[in-house]
Each structure stands twice: as structure tokens, then as C-alpha cells.
Length: 154
Image 1 (spheres, one colour):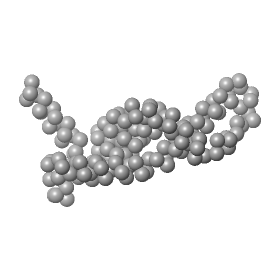
Image 2 (cartoon, helix red, strand yellow):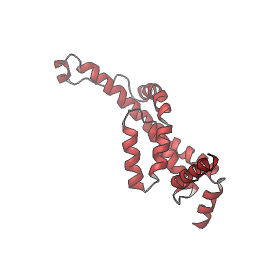
Image 3 (cartoon, rainbow, N blue to C red):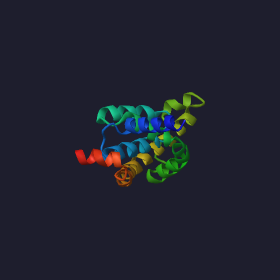
Image 4 (tube, rainbow, N blue to C red):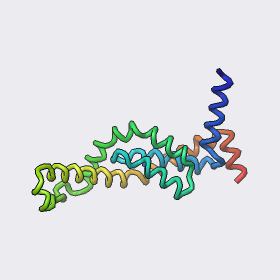
């Protein structure tokens, strides 16, 4: 059983690093966590996959970080809504005139406004968060011998 466990650990470690330097892996993990905290449920997985392909990042690592951040995403929805309301004028949203035709349209417009405020607040917070997490993860990942060797060979 111990042999199987260590074999799985080695396979997962090789799968996650895939020849990446500690800095690149740290950026991948930080981006996955930040995107995983987007206050719109369902968006992070697709966005992480698209960014991993576009930026040639480690897809399994970014998705693992994204999934690890899911509880944080749920915890941060309300704070992002509140921050968005504070950052952007709370009375600035207007319900379109056509919305009065349907009884649920004003409620839907209100929820859309809350989601937009939360998303804008996330945009303000995400950039600095990725930078700070990348620095912190880089320091930690440089302590991993296999990753340090990958960085030394570059």
C-alpha cells in the first residue's frame, strides 16, 4: 500500500510540474485560485481552461487550484457584492423600461446589477492578489528540490 501511495504521489507531482519552473507554476496556481474566486458560479472552470491553453500554462495545476478555491468563491460572493456597491455608485443602475413588462424583470435586473458589482470588485482585487500569491508561492516552490532543479536548468 505504501508503494502505491508513493507511486501516486510521484505521478501527481510530475503531472503538476510538467517541466515548469517554480515561478511559472506559482503564477499558474495563483491565477487558478484568483479565477476560482470569481463571484459568478460556473465561469471559473471554463476561464481557467481557456487561459491555460492561451498562455500555455499547466492545465491540471490551474484546474486543481481553481477547484481548491471553490469554497473560497462561495465565501467571497457577498463581500465582493458589498465592495462593488461601495466602489461603484449604488444608485447608478437603472432598470430598462422594457423590464416593467414582466413581473420578475425588476428582480432579475437587480440580481444582474449585484453580479456586475461583485464581478467589478473581483477585477479590482484579483490583479494584486495574483501578484502577491505568485511571489509567496514562488518562495515556497523554490524549496521543492525537483522544482529547484527545473529552474536551475533554465
